[in-house]
Image 1 (tube, rainbow, N blue to C red):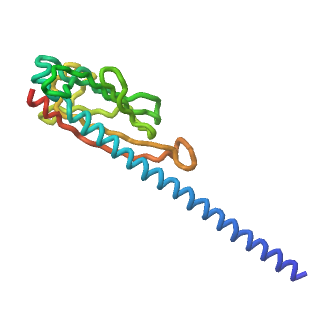
Image 2 (image 1 turned 90 degrees about the vertical axis):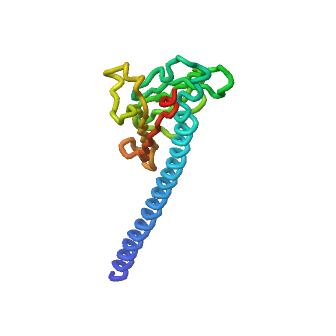
Image 3 (image 1 turned 45 degrees about the vertical axis):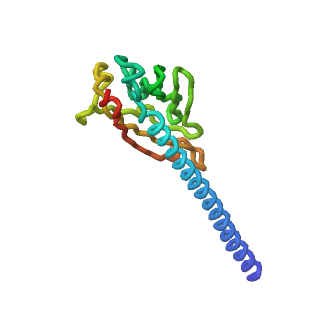
Length: 194
């Protein structure tokens, strides 16, 4: 009888050890997945920021003194949209209209960049959680409220961009999404020159 009790006790102890091992393996896999997704999201976020900052926002109003004198450089500004004119080549009088906008639904927004109405860049495959990404500042450092004062568009000197990249974690629960916030500023030197 004691042998049977010893065997049952050993089986229970072995089962507990096996459950602990399996649960630990599952947690290690889940954490590895989440860390891998965070690394990929961070890498992608840095790429999106580099493209937005260096390829688009840096060129706000570029070459407009020769290609488009007298035109409004910034055509629209809001928390989820920024439109501007720029000329790619200072020797060709062609002015292009660029628009950076946020499209989508909550926690699944995408950033799109259009040139003359055609989409030329988007932030896929990762989403951003917020759609109010732009904050505008004048050359004196004062924050502008474009919604309350649409005429303040002509005073924009800087743009602060706040992005919160997001993706689902291993649990695929919306309340426990992985997030990576990133903020950058861009001064529009071409506006000060023109």
